[in-house]
Image 1 (cartoon, rainbow, N blue to C red):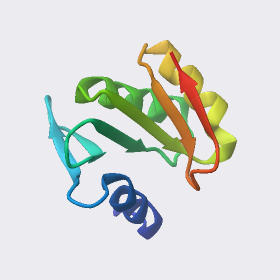
Image 2: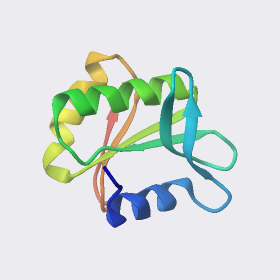
Image 3: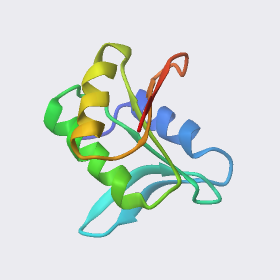
Image 4: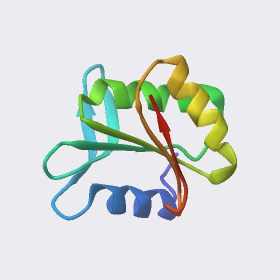
Length: 105
């Protein structure tokens, strides 16, 4: 299934100037975006399913970055927090607009 333009734009914004999108991970997986210095990993998950959110959290954990960000639609933020706690992985859950964020420890 092809990527939506909004998902592609969110990945590019998360990577920032000099960052990479579709970064290979171990086991034929790919991380949505990583910053130029490799310190900030971002996953964008728009589906809102619990399984999809858990997979995204696992990819963030495998990234090895210091800052891990899971971006989801605002209505899915509580589910995303629970998915990150269930893996467990620490990081930030942000809405797609970037106006709200929740720290997960």
